[in-house]
View 1: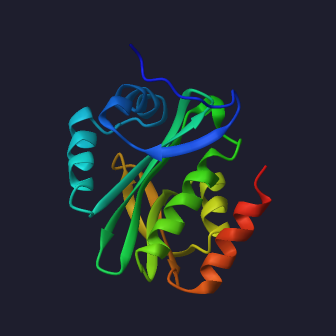
View 2: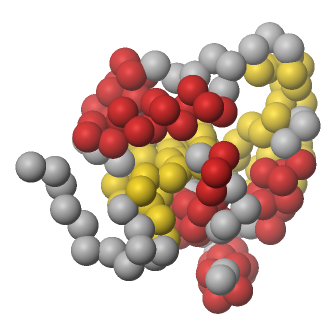
Length: 175
């Protein structure tokens, strides 16, 4: 018997990532990345969630898993490892919803800063991250597939009320 959810057909929801999600996650990985993470990589990351050093979530539209994201914690910093959305569902606020959840979690854990890398050609993702207060701080040359550069972005003051005001405004303006 399959896992049943009671969701509106078009409702956007998130939940903690579990092993049962991996088949669909790997489908999305294969669509998005020339060198996708492996099943083993995700299993390892999920096992690290027990230690509190990692957090991964999935996003659903209705009963369809359409995205996933994750974060590592190191001292007072949170590092966004991935935000990925099925190409058929991009532009519908899925990545924004996951960023809201991850940002709130980083704030609640007392993180003072968040960081991530984004492909230099991914202007849409860069725009999303800027809305959350991320600013470019450097370049990792040939970071992706030993070919494309990554822009390193940081958001500071994650532990402040101003950061949460920004997140709450984004949350209030979502469709």
